[in-house]
Image 1 (spheres, rainbow, N blue to C red):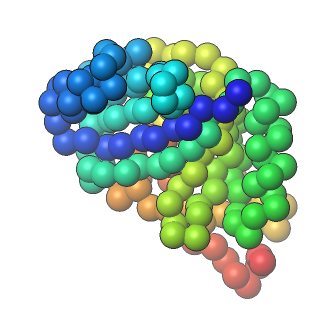
Image 2 (tube, rainbow, N blue to C red):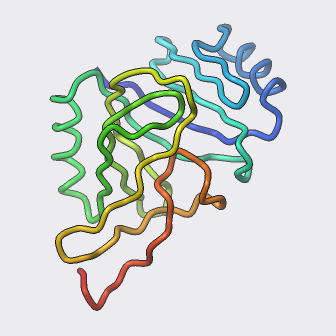
Image 3 (cartoon, one colour):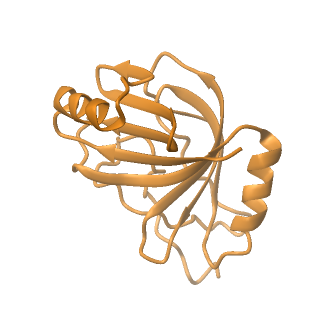
Length: 164
């Protein structure tokens, strides 16, 4: 079963934990010094907030799945989109290890499709995007801070002379 995911960067974590706890009528499932997450059933959502130096606002949207098979199904659908896909295996991010696929929608909003493999004790850093067989790096939305976890780092420009 799929769960909708929203990740928002905040400038005051305690204030936002209080706000969203009241809004959802539930305390966070995970609370860290720089991160909080609500795994809600009504609505079925993985709602996360973090305070890690990035500009406050929407970080990314996503779909969380329960199995590798569901992730493969989502990946197959992503391949039909007119978008470049970044694959990350065992990415360490948001106190979890996950297999992921990233795409940008037509507005440039990053979408993460992921299957969580395990909890980890650190916020982590996503794996660097790897070039495809032609040497291309896929473009992704800029986080505004390349050290911030979650969206892959935008460290390489799309080389249209070699790709696409």
